[in-house]
Amino acid sequence: MPIATPEVYNEMLDRAKAGKFAYPAINVTSTQTLHAALRGFAEAESDGIIQISTGGAEFLGGQHNKDMVTGAVALAEFAHVVAEKYDVNVALHTDHCPKDKLDGYVRPLIAISEERVKAGRNPLFQSHMWDGSAETLADNLGIAQELLPRAAAAKIILEVEITPTGGEEDGVTHEINDELYTTVEDALRTAEALGLGEKGRYLLAASFGNVHGVYKPGNVVLRPELLKDLQEGVGSKYGKASPFDFVFHGGSGSTAEEIATALENGVVKMNLDTDTQYAFTRPVADHMFRNYHGVLKVDGEVGDKKTYDPRSWGKLAEAGMAKRVSEACANLRSTGTKLK
Image (cartoon, one colour):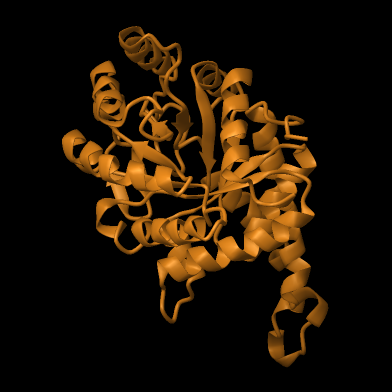
């Protein structure tokens, strides 16, 4: 199937919200990790989301220029071609974009989609994230108010992060402390500024103790039940049940119980990067250690071309990451839910 149209993407999110499941949003940095994500979704018979961060886009742009827009556009165009061969619907999304990179990343990408839509085509990306978590909430929402109507006109869904996620993501760092919990007041201010869909659809990355990257159990206190408070606090004022479509950031290492609670409270998208990076790299390390004398020309020998051919270890990497993506689908209850 093709990359999801705006209509299909909206239907995907609506079905997830109603069915209390979520889509894994898999960060990719290459055509190979893209294929791994697509394969994982297809093997789980789940639709899904593929996303590119600013750092991932810079890497994709090549180390000669490190151009984020070039990298993101190139992979998106590639995805539009190869996704046709996978029997699932996949939305393309750009991950964390802080204020100092908006002009070099999200705004130009929105402009590309605006031109595509004017020409009667679908947008290149189906959603973009504005990460204003390092700004004051007033400034954060002010920029979101500028981006939301542009995104809506280009048939794009905006994702906003209104309070910090701990840890580090592409150079944006937040301490692990009590500020990692969104309040009902924060959510009310968001609804007042951005509406609840009438000004354009958006996904809300609210914080309930989330931390990016690798962490050991006990170092992070997740409170996914907080999302229910936000839904009820805003819903009671506006007379709308479960008004937000939530995103779960910093999900690596979360327990099954924490994930289940988040799903019950309106999470429709959960980001995965750290776990899938490891799942991709681990088989490569295994191959290199097992075939040390083949992948290297040790002591003047010639090595073994079959073992240092990138295809030999690349296939293992793809399979390892695809398996982890399928596991994520099972954890998020999206297995077998693909749109027919």
